[in-house]
Length: 402
Ligand SMILES: Cc1ncc(COP(=O)(O)O)c(C=O)c1O
Image (tube, rainbow, N blue to C red; front, side, top):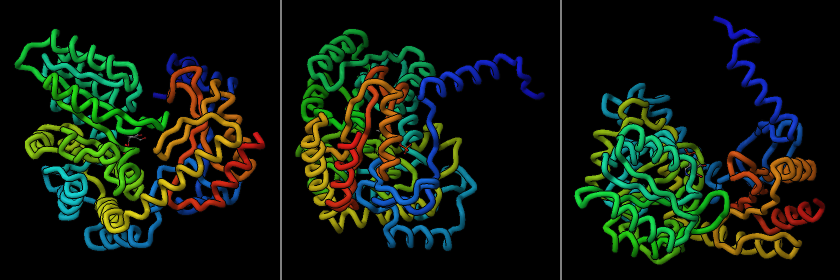
């Protein structure tokens, strides 16, 4: 069957796309014609300073990370051609999962093809009807969808959403959740460690204390905190002086600081990871992480553990960039994270500012609805340990010209 011009799906899709183009909200994909670095080659734009990658530690093109992937490819081939529990678990998966658990100081970890998949596995697998899940309003879309899926698959899961990082609101939600469920059921609290669109930090110590008071399980997606926050890059909990076991379950990505390839994981106590291995649909019914990626990610984590100075360099860059951006007259949140958001309000304005920056040789993305709430469109500047001071100075000069 061909989709005719009158087909409702086609007319609807074309009308949405036309509207996006007319209102300046249409996203143009940029073609990158070389490796991911502080300077990146973009088709039609040439070399640009890159301030929108999650390559926080500059490991995406590190020779040893690349070499580890090539060795994995030579030794094991392109992939498992199988889901994990059939014949899809290669030795590098086991090695990587031990490394992740060791890095975070927890008992066990299990990998997925993405953090999206890992997060989508958490609540539909671990929550049961009668449980309550409490989620921060600014949590990443994968958490939102995981909670939604759990409430659909496990009918009778209660959902509560609290105002961003507001501990009084969380206490209120915990009280309501405890009143709504009986003592045989679990309460889950889930948050991003670093809020990806704000660059702000979750108040994990206060959340831990509240979870202990109400007997709740604390789940943290630290995709933007891992490799970035804390003296040794363990993540947002380390920044707050907490240990890995102070967080009940981590989810995280291998697609940002930890090599930037792809992949995600769940990490925590062995019994919880065992249940994920036995029951999580994203790995029971979907292929394993490609072995090249597993080998590269493992090498990236080893480099991070051996070279904590990379985290310090990132921290220095973050402090310098925030100071200079502010001095140039822009308002940015005072935060130690590598995400610096400049709120501009209107989506079309954010997109046109990012276009102008690209003309000036600086690659920064403008985010609007539906990635962020309507009216809060922003430029999101992301720092890396691979940036030099001169790169940051050039960014600030370009910002001044906007
Ligand atoms: C907070 C957070 N969680 C999860 C993800 C998804 O990670 P992945 O690309 O590994 O699916 C992202 C990616 O943007 C993220 O920012």
